[in-house]
Image 1 (cartoon, rainbow, N blue to C red):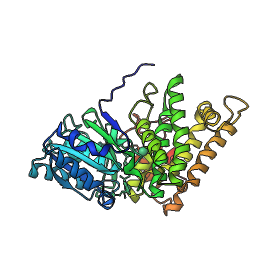
Image 2 (cartoon, helix red, strand yellow):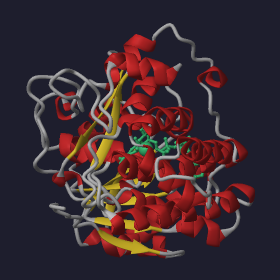
Image 3 (cartoon, rainbow, N blue to C red):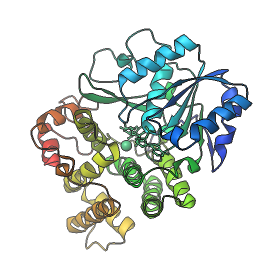
Length: 393
Ligand code: NZQ
Ligand code: ZN
């Protein structure tokens, strides 16, 4: 087991911590660009509280509102222009993963003279991976992506119908100010999709990782078990602050690099396939994952039954007859799929009105960046275009 682990983001976690925003931001800049989504932070009073905390600390601000779910590169350009025009020197992301991802790339694009789309990997010859950004402070309002404490960002280009990512050290937020109270207003469906996203971040590392990672396996299983238990409660009662708190923490743990450390996943195939679907149909990320993940698991279980048997045994207490008992492995996958359905996630493409017409296109797009020399999508096992189409079917 050889690996490196690095995560420099200072995490401040807990109900009520939003009031510290001004104090925290003032350490990194005097004028903030506050990046927000379609208005939920204004409807629920979060924006006013954030601004009042900045005021108290003497931090001025400008705003870049209207970041869409599956954030667009055009919004990133708009944000970078506002930073330059207004002389902002720190970026505050106040919203879900889409807002945080857009804010991260705005922080890089503001210091880059070229086209911000150069910064996102999409199969181009010269991917300009950012090496510097303005300081970033993330304040998540939805538990899902873990973007608040990681160095990734996912951006869509609606002109070319490509949704892709950049992941690099410069994008680590300086501070993640995580106040689970802000997630109390997330509607049931988005709560469920977030829970699915959290679980999928963990399963991607668990099933695509190296053999011989017993400690990491237990971290992963513990995170999944808790995401299921507390996720169910958060969906059933959105006002349950304890459930919201545990789900928020799970979202951070699931993708801040720690659970995957040492497992060195060969890829994130379910995510790459979902991103291709989102690029063409603008679907919600977690809903797309609920469809792709169980189907991918059934495919991958044939190649690596032992790990899927372990999942069935340790997550659902099933009793395998052998360590490669495929029937038991499949039953574990069925149980996960049933859980996702029970909280309101779709599990078939037809539920989102997506047919088979573009399957080969999605398969091609999924392997745009994370591919081997033969063009197969990285993962365990690597997937040919036919494999991807089969999973989608
Ligand atoms: O836009 P507003 O008005 O804020 O409404 C949002 C949006 O409609 C709403 N919402 C957020 N917080 C709320 C709320 N509504 C009521 N109360 C609140 N407190 O929820 C809707 C969805 O928001 P969005 O930010 O799109 O959701 P999510 O956090 O799931 O982010 C999804 C994006 O992140 C990317 C996805 O691909 C997708 O583009 N991902 C980013 C990752 C990363 N940076 O590490 C990893 C993930 O795997 C993922 O790919
Ligand atoms: Zn995800």
